[in-house]
Image 1 (tube, rainbow, N blue to C red):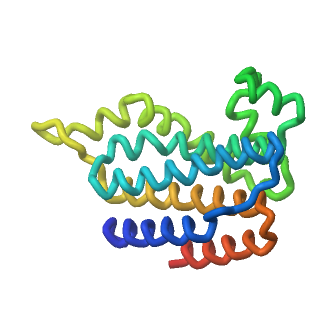
Image 2 (image 1 turned 135 degrees about the horizontal axis):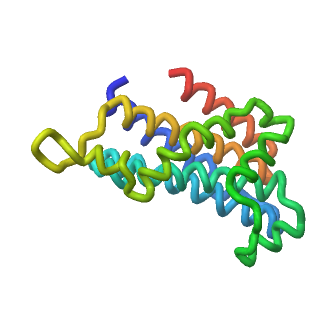
Image 3 (image 1 turned 90 degrees about the vertical axis):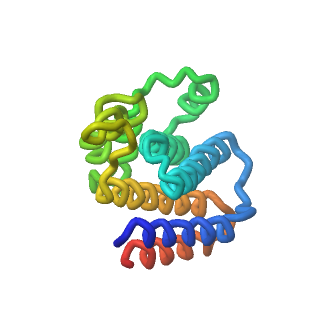
Length: 198
């Protein structure tokens, strides 16, 4: 699929997600609100990546992929895995678990046991860090034979958008699960299936 088509499809998904998730009622508890905040940040970062790619600001777009992944993992972990003591530690920025431990805790849940998130962490983390922290992956993609300018291949941009959209849909599903609207998760699942199959 051409980048322009994938961008259009991504923008249409953004509009759909905004209207569908708009005014989702969430039960007030520290756990649910903090999880919701993380997942909402995932959706916002997803939108930012799409806008940045639209404007060909690829370095900044790639720098955000780690943030998309991290905010999703933290949101799911807070809601599904964290103990009350860990919620309190998180609230004061004193949580002792590292990121891989959060991913592993999620993978230990029956619904997540396929290892997809752990594989993404293990196989993509070094590259995500390089993009985020202006490492060699980011630097090499600024060099074109004799000039310094963005040099990202279409396949890399497509992979970025596909990964971002997948994580955004997964975050939207978690937001739907947190909401009081019991029909919303199925609506998101149906949209995700339709979106990913095209």
